[in-house]
Image (cartoon, rainbow over all chains, first blue to last red; front, side, top):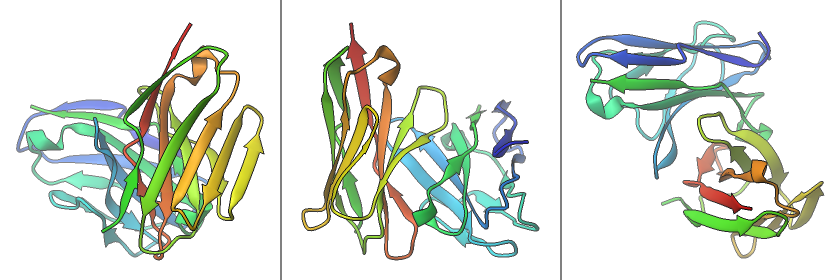
Length: 113
Length: 109
C-alpha cells in the first residue's frame, strides 16, 4: 500500500441495506476524513477523526457512522442506505490538521437504488 | 457562515494563460490550498499559500491577499491535460479545510 486505499471502487446497493466503505492509510497520519462529492456541491465533510480513538461530525453526518480503532483504518458505515446517499465518497488523511494538506484515496462510487 | 466562491466553469485555449479566482469569508485563516481534480479521479495537491504574495511552481502560480480574502491560480502555457476541476480550500480557525465547489476548466485546441 502506498498512500490511501479505499474499497470498494464502486458499488450498487439496494435501499435499506447496510454498507461499510473501507479506508486504510499507511502514512501514519493522525487525522482522517470522509467526504462525499456531488455535482455542483463540491466536497462535503461527513465525519472526521483527529487521532485514533476519537471521531467528530462534519457538515453532513446524518445516516453515517465511523470508527477509528487504530491509526490506519477509518471505515464509514451506512446503516440503512437511502437513494440520497448516492454519491462519490472520498477518504482523506493529513499528518495532524488541515494546514498539512490532505492526501485523498481514489474514491468509492456508490449508487443506492 | 463560512463561504468560498469560485467560478463554476471557465474555457481557455491551448497554449494560453488562464486565471481562476477564489474569494473566501471564513472564521479565521490558516492557509489556502489549490487542488486539481481530473474527472473520475481524486483531488491532488497543487499549491499552498499562507502569506501574501505569489508562489510560482513551474507553469502554475498561486497568489494570496489575506486582507482582501482573495486568491487566484494562474496556469500558463495551457495543455489539454490541464482540463480538470480546480478546487480552492481554506484552513479555518479550527484547522479544518473549507472547500469551494470547484472550477471546471475546459481547454480547447
